[in-house]
Every structure is written in C-alpha cells, then in structure tokens.
Amino acid sequence: MPFKVVGVLEKKGGSMMGDQDDLVVLPYTTAMKRLIGTTKLNIIYVSAVSLVAVDSAQSEIEALLRQRHHLAPNQDSDFTMRSQQEFAKMSEQSSKTLSVLLASAAAISLLVGGIGIMNIMLVSVTERTREIGIRRAIGAKGRHVLMQFLIEAVTLAVCGGAIGVGLGIVASNVVSAKGGLPIHVSPGAIALAFGFSAAIGIFFGFYPARKAARLDPIEALRYE
Image (cartoon, rainbow, N blue to C red):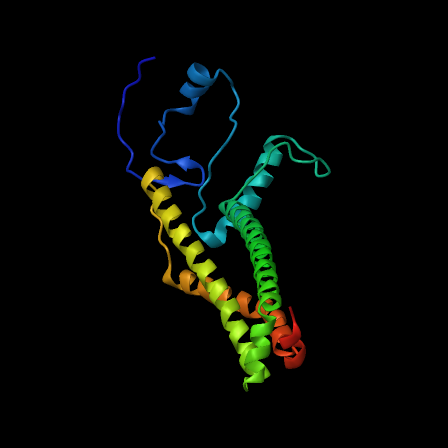
C-alpha cells in the first residue's frame, strides 16, 4: 500500500515500550480503515505539562473517559490507565525481586562453600593430631595452633574466591564479546568478594581451629 513520506522523526533511542525509532506515524483514521480494520482506538498516549501534573491529568482524563463512555458512578471503568510512574515502580519491584533471588543463590553458595571448608579443616585437624601434639609439647600455645588453622581456612577461602573472581571476569568478557554488551567489572565488587571469602574462612574455620587448639598435648601425641 503506497504512502507518501512527509518527514523523518528525530532519533530518540530505546525506551521501556521498545525502540522509539522503529515506528511509522500516520493519521489514525487511515490506520483504522486501511491497516487495522476497526473503528475504535485501542490505546492513547498522553503527555502531561509537567511531572507534578501527572496525577491531576490522569484524574481529569479518567473522569472525561467515564463521561464519554456513559458510566455510572458505581460502575467499574471499561478502560485501563497506566502512567510512567507505575511502569517505573513495576521495573523497580522486578529489580528488587531479582536482587533477592540473586542474593539468596549467593548466600546458599557461600553456605555450601563454608561447610565444605569446615569439613576439610576438621579432617585436617584429625589427620594432623600428632603434629599438633608435637607443637604443643615443644612450647606452642593454644592461640598459636588456633591462628595456624584459621590462616589455613582463610587461605582456602581466599583462593576459592580468587578462582571465582577470575572465572567471573572471563565469563563477563566472553558475554561482552559474543553478545555485544558493554560490561564493567567494578574493583569494589572484587574487593568485596575477597572480603566475603576471608570472612567465610574465619567464620567456618573457627570451630576446627578451636578444636585443634583445645587438644590435650599428651592425648594428641598418643593418637594413631
């Protein structure tokens, strides 16, 4: 169907409603008769004079539409109205939900990793009982043994965190290269990841380290 192009719109870019540059504007009567085949409008876009006037404009439009549709005061509206604020709230709520889900997945991963570190350290304490006994016999105090195993637990956690950060950076670069999406890895996020790794190592490594520090030197030397 031939149409005459009378002008080109200024480039606006994307929005929540899609690509604003991927559209054609024509008289609504022509679109209704020639393209859609209907006599009713399905959607109307309205722009308020300012942000503070959005609510009052929405109320006035709703009252006018109810009057034009001959709706009684006790009847429900046969149309729906949405403002940009509502879309923004919906987007914000979706972002919060996604953040909670990601935080839950991260918390479960940290818990599983911490339990793994604790089990490894408990096995290490059991296997090195005689070593602990010898250290205590030659003068090492409980706090020295405690610090030794805490350092080992933190080292395990930080090494795991470093591997995770490295894999995350590589995956981000691959996604950026393949998908054409700009991705920025924040140094603060990396520092936060290492901090969490160290905290997990201290938290879950404290019990095995405390158990090792409380071993009786004589019983430890007798352990087979």
